[in-house]
Image (cartoon, rainbow, N blue to C red; front, side, top):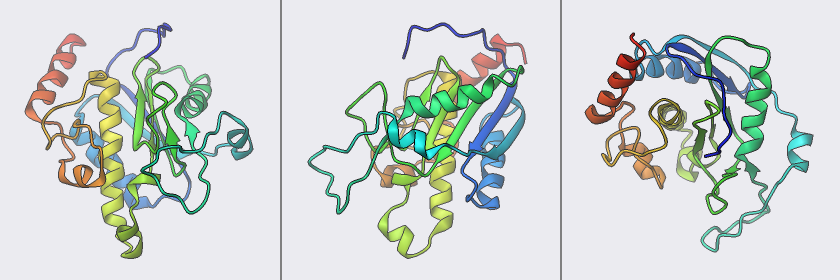
Length: 215
């Protein structure tokens, strides 16, 4: 978290999703459907558009190589800082004046700009800036790629997208309920085992926020 101050935020608002252009229409449809179900009436509209990132910029900006001893790589993999993606999302926000949350979905592997030991992230949210990024890189395991289980991978992307949006609305805390989408998933098994929805406790928090904004 940062100490920077941002403009006051109001709900309901719009949700803007920036996504790499090679994702399927089924994923986009599922994102819209399940986000609306999880956060009923929090978003006026969900806008989805292509996210074209300047890779030349990325390659020259704070890249780093993984150093964790538990990660065995056959080739060098460049990781990219989450701040870079937040900056990209906020740059696009300059051209919009309506209150909105922004979510970016990328194939690139991420590391946290705030917690340097967090690498190969599924996603991260910046609560103050009201934007988040999800990486599909670690959501694709060897077995699902070989078996072409695209549906399974899409479910993971939807869950982690809802998880990060949940942080932007509810705050930075995780839920202790392993079935809740707001539970912190340390591996793919936990991602697969949790539900796509908020648990009753997290839903109550959502209702409190709804009441505070009178909608």
